[in-house]
Amino acid sequence: QVQLVESGGGLVQAGGSLRLSCAAAGRTFSSYDMAWFRQAPGKEHEFVAAISWSGSRTTVANSVKDRFTISRDNAKNTVYLQMNRLKPEDTAVYYCGAAARDGNPKLNRDEYDYWGQGTQVTVSS
Image (cartoon, rainbow, N blue to C red; front, side, top):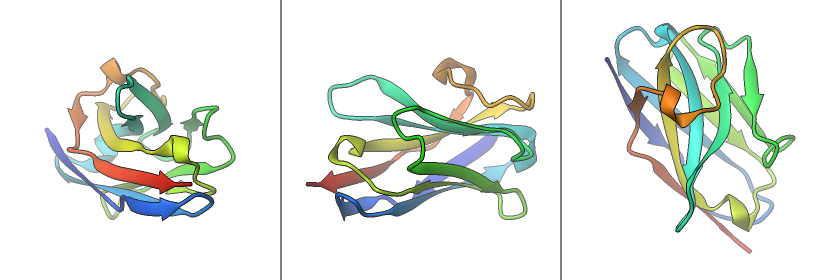
């Protein structure tokens, strides 16, 4: 089992940047493939980015491609989401998820077993 805690959210103007962090505690962090999802008010959860347990493979949603980057530091038990050139439509609660590793970044929310409590990102126009 692993516990996840997100941080780094906040209010930023359009065009700005934020870096989200998701710190893991419990079972060995490198046992998990990780991902970020988000949920905007009144909308379904949306896949943002995923990374394999080693960090060698990543997948990013088309809606954030070239603006967002996912990375991880297994020595620090942390996965990151670097968000650049933010847009008002990026406003959402961002969640990190952990899935038992198979080396493949996963796009389906149902494949993740553990979730953090989320961190709010608000982008003003």
